Amino acid sequence: ASARSRSVHSAECCIFLWRYDDRVVVCDVDGTITRTDVIGFIGTIRGGTAVHDHTHPGVCSFMQDVHDRLGVKVLYLTSRPLRLLNQNKRFL
Image 1: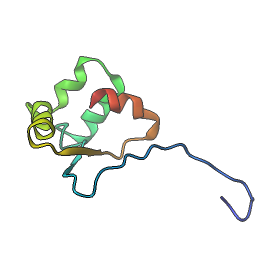
Image 2 (image 1 turned 180 degrees about the horizontal axis):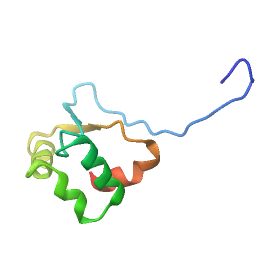
Image 3 (image 1 turned 60 degrees about the horizontal axis):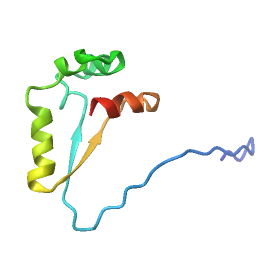
């Protein structure tokens, strides 16, 4: 909210509650899962199979194993714009 204009803004969000003893690994997307920041980002915007050409080989199965075998929750971080949320979710 702004005191000057007295306008009110709102945002919709989701909160995921985890237990205090849950194990979590935080993973950056751009430059960590993708080979480069820019090309991985552009690949996500374009969609299609070209997206996976810009990921590190084996990273998807590795992250799946971290979750499945070790029971660790994975939290992905990115600085990509919110308007690309759906594309980013499909990519991940």
